[in-house]
Length: 138
Image 1 (cartoon, rainbow, N blue to C red):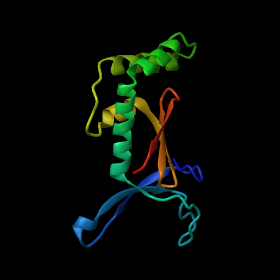
Image 2 (cartoon, rainbow, N blue to C red):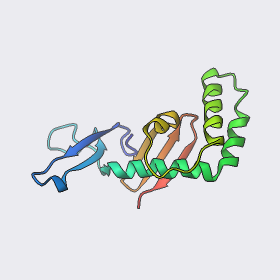
Image 3 (cartoon, one colour):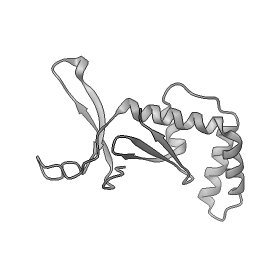
Image 4 (spheres, rainbow, N blue to C red):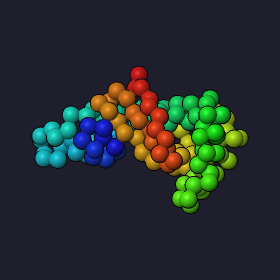
């Protein structure tokens, strides 16, 4: 999601005749709503940066396991059945989880609602339970 205009980000492949220069990036889908004219000033972001943001977010949750488990325990008696389900799922997952070093797609879809990219400098990661974690892009 674009933190500048609110449009979704889309995956693009920047091709080149030199395969070493081929890049996969994510860019605001509203950037060029009119051909040839920039509508959004947000910057593109490399695929690997988003993967690393997820890895860092997951590992931060593991490092602060007690805080997150306590937070989720408080919501376990929610009237919202979907929220209850997610909280139980998160608790079960995090209780036995170890830090990760590689992107895990299944884990991503278990935890993440969206990424919001701000000016190519920071990402706000929103979990399915509405928790938001901010990551700086290096």
